[in-house]
Length: 441
Image (cartoon, rainbow, N blue to C red; front, side, top):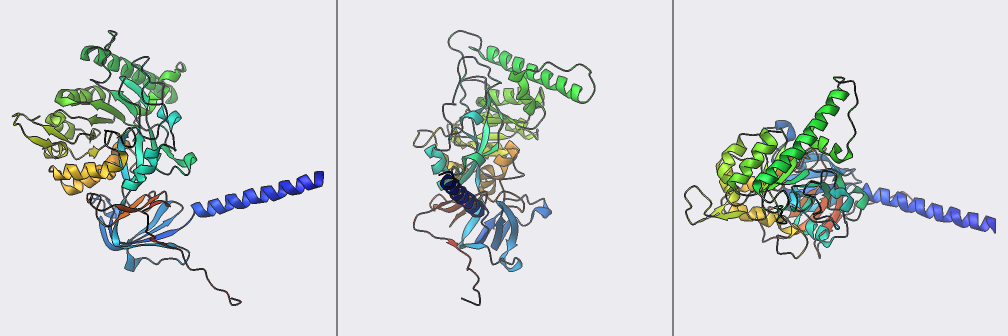
């Protein structure tokens, strides 16, 4: 009996190992993407990044990364690579969302106290959220998902990839950004501190001072400038990442006053990399001030137009993106603020439509596409991996018959980390490589 059980165990173990090997081989599939036009989004002022637009190009993908990219005439396709034939289509970087709330489970707001530096969204990631599945149908491949804006400091966001089939590999960065709300939503109408802008500003400055002093104490200790070890405070430990410049701070704010207060409090006073988000109600009135600061990244949406919020109050609609851009803001990204599928706020898969609307309202087309790719990645500090198609970066690629701003044509195929995670029904753009024949065959 023991021998029989041992034999069964060995067979089961071999099946598991074979399955694991097969899965590993599947994950390691290599592709050659042949595209009529490759929109790389690589910065034009960086010659080493390659051509910004490549006509009749080829992308080689291996180990989830871009191995080679350039004109098809200059790249040899190895026999083992499966061909993705998009010769009559565009290939573009996967879309990056800097402000959303999808893919979470019970992690929207914790309203007990207004300051929660100990909380993090990484504990709430839900790969089975249908909004994650729908996101890739619109070309979205990376999102910074976060708490709501019910408190002044909601905790820390998480950056995830849109491949729910491998939940263990979804998290790109465990601590995406420090999430704060500067005004409006977190007003404490119960009568406790935070009912007024004065109260909220005091609380924000209080917790920032605590986090800054804690970070500086540890830096001095680690640099040998102080002998006594600082007291470990787990509630402030995560804030060190923001004050050490490893992650940005994303701040919910509105109006010209709010955007200026955000810039002043977080960037000027605390030297934090900051992303003022939403910024509707005339936030662009201080766009010239935002443009003066390299580490201030404006993030607009879900509203991308304002009515009459100009110096003249001219009773006209104004595109927020074009108004910021006219004032010199190039560090500009666009969001959906999505909280789920089929919600009154823009669904996640419509981020490209947000950019298209911004372009329709006067934003330069190139700037609009940058706002949902490389600029969003730069704001989050993940542009070394996503946001553009360059050798060595993650193979997050969108293929369709028009540009990302062409909302009349659907997305045909999406790769995340070199894996095909979506292909439009009735299409088959992937051709498997031919198996070599042997003499016996």
